[in-house]
Amino acid sequence: MEMKDGEITRLNVDGKEIPASEFDQYNELAEELQRSTPPIPYRRCHLSRACLPCHPCLR
Image (cartoon, rainbow, N blue to C red; front, top):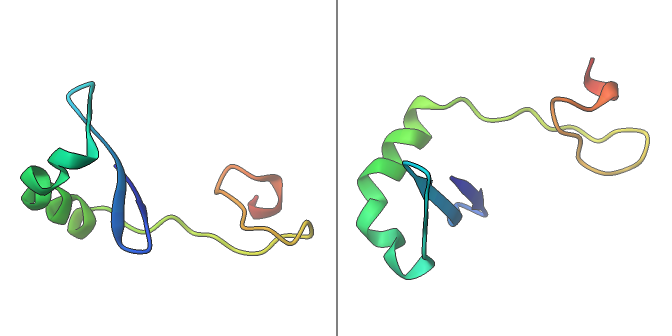
């Protein structure tokens, strides 16, 4: 699941890509994932853009 501004932008369930028109059928699953998954840490790096956890400036 990918989200932007609190909204689902991409959803994959059991290897199947779910079309945006069907996201509402997975609200319960999405809410459970949000509750059980810690947020990904982001911070600004020397390149002035958000870094992913794998970026060298977070190591």
